[in-house]
Length: 297
Ligand code: GLU
Image (cartoon, rainbow, N blue to C red; front, top):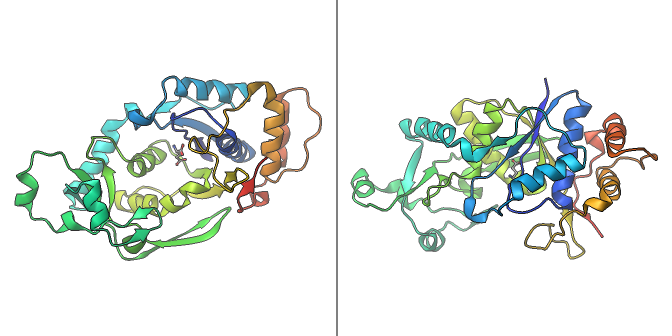
């Protein structure tokens, strides 16, 4: 059975870009008679806004985007991430890293697809050095030199060499918080997610997630990365670019707009948002979604 999900981070309210992701993942799941789960990615308390989780769920309900089962909160699942890290540690696939942000930048192997490529200083440290500091380390995963390729249902074939494009990456931060890359892989597998439909900004993360799935012996879901919605300056809508929160009085207009962005034809007049979503489920085709960024008003 198809199992999909929407996995917002409660760092702010939903905006048009996150509504697009919610709607597309919902339609793809419902269009294939699948389950649609909601997972709250509340792993980074310093970046979270009080009340955002509840507000996001209320917004989904207001758009008639009803999920299956209980909402899962990553903040309650640290034991699962710790077990995955312990498994990798037992196989010496991870190592503690004591580098400050400054050192990481100063000793970088250049720029990768998602920031600087870690130069590997701590990968070469002896055990003694690791033990004689009381500073808590970050834990990094050793990456390989092979190419990781995958087919994305919207963006087409992708490939990355983790060694040169990303470098050894962090699974547990020095401040004690779990990295998104590990948590997402553990949870997608634990929840039986077999289809991931999400924003294009996460396309560069996917090879890291596939690599982790391979190491942990977890199944690889199929991936579809949606086009980014940008403002008139070509910037992704986000908190930084002041994406306006969704105006719930204009729900129908906003939902119709999102359906057009997703390549659906103009929807007919309907009596309710639930009817509009039902119509969209009937007409949904992932193949109609454009890979290119969409400039919104
Ligand atoms: N929590 C992530 C975000 O809000 C999405 C993670 C995912 O879909 O894999 O950007």
